[in-house]
Image 1: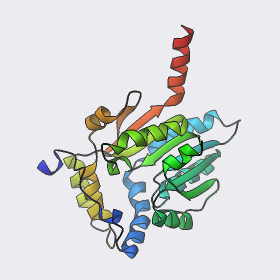
Image 2: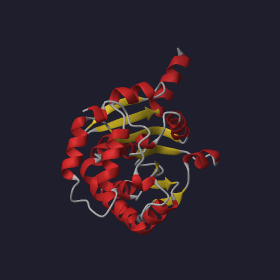
Image 3: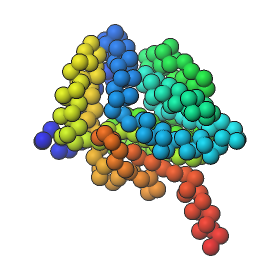
Image 4: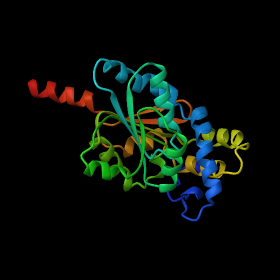
Length: 244
């Protein structure tokens, strides 16, 4: 499919426009919860990438997690509920620079240990904040080629453990699948912007080539890329090298 041969980095999603319809935007935020629960793959990421960290620190302080670009706030709310259900302590800070998203998220997703804030990741870096886990959902494809290195550097600076960026993996199959299943999601920007998001997203090879040294890219079901930096492992390796 020629439409997907190259990343459509200049394509613009309707909901990102300052003049987008506020009712459609709010319905989009609400429908994010359904879409992310169904196809973003966060249950598997929680089980394999986040819960083991919580179990490791079960006798110590609560694990802290930062969600950058939280949108409607449904993903951090899910993570909070899963941790509570597992009897594990997780304190989440979820940020988004868009005041519309922050207002919606704070109003709809209250939970124990869950704080929403309107902020850029750069603000938290300047404040000297750090977290055990830093994550994002569907943020990478929004970034320009010039903006990606800075975003990754900031997320790494904010993390003392593991960084997990979960994003769409572009492919004709992903486009066809979303086109087929998204038709019931009416009254929002989900369907047109979702298809644009797929066109803007990276293949695994493209993301691997764009990521700095130390980051790993793995394919995650369904149609996902996971871009991960394990700072704890790198720090252990550096100590081992120094000792040798």
